[in-house]
Image (cartoon, rainbow, N blue to C red; front, top):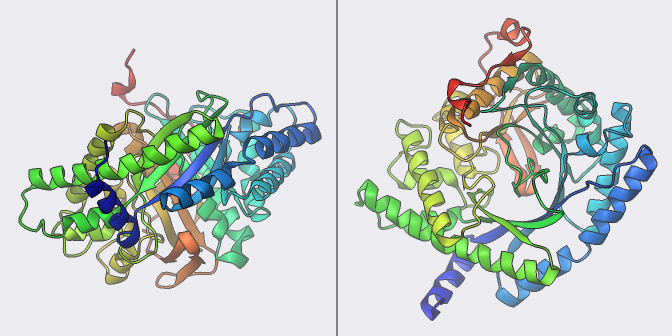
Length: 454
């Protein structure tokens, strides 16, 4: 039972420490919407989404009012569209039409993002996946709410380097086609290895084929709460520090479970998972970097940063698992640059570079996230950065991702400004030595030896 002191504590977290339910994401299977006709497929998709999601916004709003819990984002994820469009899409332009349909449906029901314009060529690339990938730049340039993702590898399959090479070109083209909006298309495009089927966070969310027809996944976030809890813990040893973070994560997760179960009951849709990912925002005090610095690191990026992040990530997961048997997704700590003012400050101060961020991704919950680089960065260099990140995920049996923005016309030292949750990002320096001969080899990097488990 929750006692009055816990109620008071939770209210304080919400009012003063930026605790919120970051997202309710309705996962929808589009299996059954397929048709040989593009027009019929689009019609089926639109009808299913608008019917299944028609009460998502109103129910979320009711829960917000009744429980005084902020629910910041309401979103939808769908079955990877490369699967749904495989029968009717004969060209990249056909997939763009499906993207437009998804955008219309998202706007009709009132969600801020819809994920699942996705392909999964982890081991090999089907023709339908190639066509969807080739359609991504135009699809993201003509839509507002659609997010795209591509899973390029896994611990079991290795890394599809042909797809990695292609994605470098696709990211460059996406940046160009959305150049009038600070290349924002790239902020809605993620590449993965070991992508989970139940991730509620954008831009990488999709509704995996292992999922039910419809599920509700909830993402809870509270960097400000963790940071506040660390005040007064200056003299704690590491064991005591872990215990403090675990107990705080437990409390945060219980809030998410309350919202998830209530939304599930009211919408008559099964509760899927709680994703307890400490996802920062541009708001002051809502920063992963500041948590790391509160542990005793002068500036994030300094020696000790990766160890501090490992402690944080593991403690958050342990606390969350104690609070719910349905913890999933990417649960842990996100380290985006543009969405975390502490990370931005560290880049500007010279303590944080792409190479250090890459090292940090080996212990955080995802990967290189919302990083802006010079627009002149080559497609091969982008592919090399992606390949490095995919390798970390493959070898360490964890999800890793890259959301990188080669900001068209921008140079190192300048910045891009997206506003809202996406924030702003300084243009970071990229290693200019070439990896083009490596990327051109093509083929597949085989799965590691420890992948053979059966």
